[in-house]
Length: 139
Image 1 (cartoon, rainbow, N blue to C red):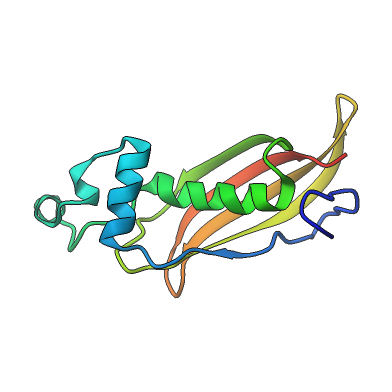
Image 2: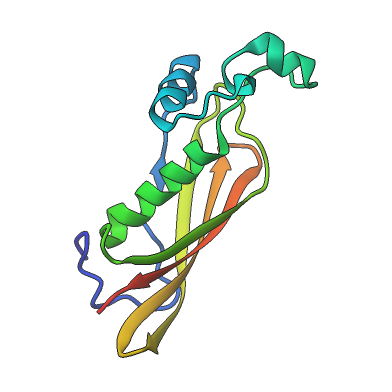
């Protein structure tokens, strides 16, 4: 199946795994600039330490962006009807995030064929950082 050809989607199908590069201070600075989220806990080690953290850590929305990219790489940006996440853990500096997903069910709703998916982002050899779901138009 090629990107955006969702005609054969069925329950149990997995999205292609997306693995992001390790989080660096530059990654965090660029994301802060692009997103407008300049919370110092993500870019200032002393500020992070004052909050009880050993170092800065990634924005939760950065992992959500990677998870969204995994979803739209598979389904195409115009097919996504709903996408949401719950933040479960922080992503530390130096971590690589792996984004995965699975089709839980295929359904008909308002004359559209849809897939309901579960999604997650996790640190390699670490915790799940995001749990998500999506509803995607597949036909």
